[in-house]
Image 1: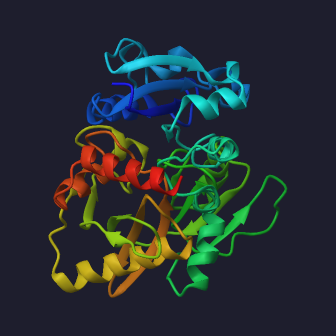
Image 2: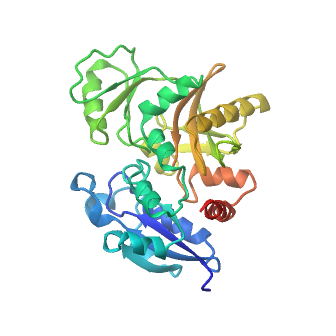
Image 3: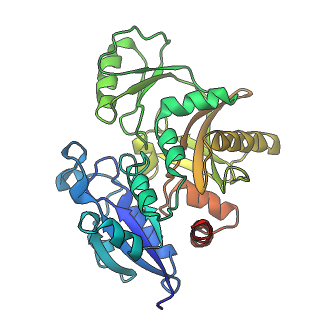
Length: 342
């Protein structure tokens, strides 16, 4: 067993914008073969700033909540460390590859990825610069536009912005840098705009006000290096709420995620081609998921998610299965590729 690959899963249990981390870790543990991998957990809880922390009382109210005890007592977990107690040299020697199971800040924003780059440990996500760009919706919209992709009209504001909003209602108000639709609101009239903006500012220093595109919502996962990517089967999203908000994403019965989507081949190929173009635009690798709206013959790219959910009910694993690839096989292949580069 000494020749097992040493995998470290980096997690935070107390970040309010990354509540689904424990679910992700449990599913990773179910899909990582203990004959191949020695699995450790590295916690960054003591490094999280107070502004991001969530209380246990708030934590257990979230529909995605799972107790960390289930991870702590899991028979596949060999060790649990506080990352802050390890030196850079120790981290470099102790682990072969990392999986960052932190969403939003400290995950997708690149903080933890930068640390792993510093100590030379490969990780299962797009590289630092791609993930940082994907995390900021204003950056990605600019890059997508430069590459000829359609994006909704929008303006970005900060807390000092006093300009009028040159968009017609309804609009979508969302944090510029945050995922899972947290802090996002569909605003139909001006009198509701201020409250929506204040809500979004709870999750990001900048807020994006975007035209609302009414149409069919699709998402497409893409895997591989941007020089030779592969699009996964298309998913049609049918939300029972007015849009695919946090509740629709995480409360059972609030949305349908149909994979493969019941669409003709021409539309399927157009969506996959658009997803690949977006993936290549930010030079992604490993895997990402691209969210789109189809209105008439136009396909609008909403955003690219460089850390798509990996729990069994998440969209990305469903796409893998529809493509004939299990999550376990995907993880094995991804780890193998990362170690080859190392």
